[in-house]
Image (cartoon, rainbow, N blue to C red; front, top):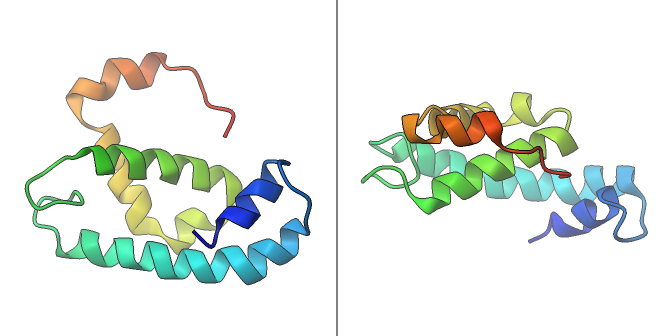
Length: 107
């Protein structure tokens, strides 16, 4: 994915100009990829990625959203539908105990 170079520099796993990568690599790629996710969510009848309801993809997307919110200070403003999706996933009753007790991730 085109956003990987920015992530690698952000996490200090590679050398590079973080600000340049953010502006010229991450932002255009994010608009493309997360814009497509927005289209999928807007067409879904369930509010999740699949019309049939919650899938592992929703868990993955909600955790990626959490990570992206820490890496991109404007993520919530730029992609509010992804934050709303994350809230919907995190509201699943069966996840409450886990979410309350899990340890925070480094990323």
